[in-house]
Image (cartoon, helix red, strand yellow):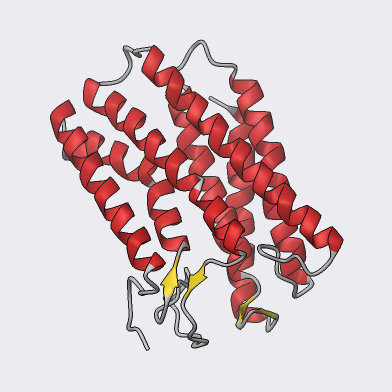
Length: 246
């Protein structure tokens, strides 16, 4: 059991619930979207990510779990906290370089995201150098391959940061996918980012339910990679994954 991550996951789950309620009760807007959707998404993804990593770490007896836990708590507290603060002020958190302070904080968010990805990659490296007896071969390879995908598509955030936008295309239409708010009228780089990072939930789930062989998991992982790359390619072409292009 990991009490540090347990309570932090629980806190972010509760925060996600509060932020979701605020999307219905608050009229604050940022870039044409209710301001509280972004904090909701980040609190939810933080809870899901750290719940998953807490499970992974139980199979690595040599790992300093306390260090991993507290480093991630610190990094994610800054990320979710700043996003929520800016939402309350009706200011953008991401891509906001309108003042020197906002530019600094946006840069620090990027550094925090890279550190999270690198620490996740370190966990993946440990799984490649150690073979836990508590896991089947299929699940072990599911974890290994999914952490590679997680790392690659985590760093896709740098592409969005360099562009100061997740959107590709010129339309100003606000047609979006409910809840996640992905654009339905132009390319949206957030979708591939989402798909790739959530490989660490999807692929191990296959190994625990439907696919029980290493060969099958490798095949599933390759299909998942192809799909994530396709989603990225569509976005870079300025085409929405779901919806229609003006």
